[in-house]
Image 1 (cartoon, rainbow, N blue to C red):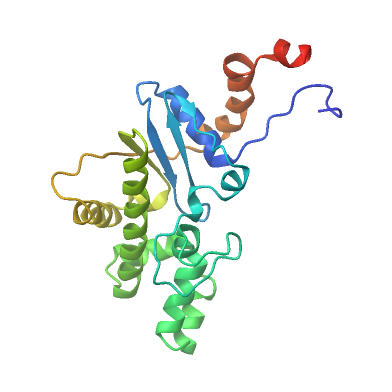
Image 2 (spheres, rainbow, N blue to C red):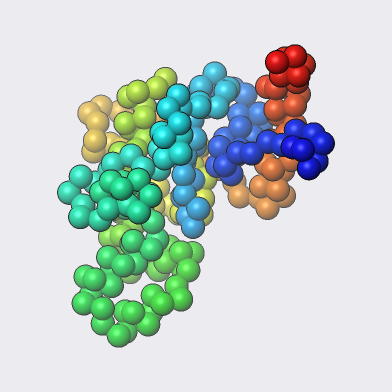
Length: 224
């Protein structure tokens, strides 16, 4: 702030995206945004405002580190818990599990050495058994995360951001697990966000605009 002689606003990309979506679609007052891909995370909007956890440690951990697989033996390097969401759905962990299941055969190691997550999804969509099984696990963990938050907060909409949600195969897995974990009709509203490069670039510009014109009271801070 001293360097620029003005105000500096810092926020995570995914929380900024949630704020932008709340601005674009104010009718969605309460929603949970889930982003999954090479970048992963989530954010919560209640009454069109970003939910800021009260505890600083929780803020640094976020919903990415909720435990979704208590039977896992894999500990997260960040939160130091085993079976957290971020670890269980990370492409790195998924690929490592596949290599382990195949006894690190040279063929599998070579195949996955330079494989992108986009290529991984395409292999699942083409019917490759190993990749389909892995995506089913990811869908299961995302469903657990969604249902748990829906129990705690007045959410009615889930915004899904990322290439994997464009896959009808993956969405069928996700809906299957949402149905499996709760009796009765699945009432969650799932909305898959379109991916537009220009729109994503606007997120960064929107952040200071939102704080300056909608959320931030400069005079109050100056008086302090």
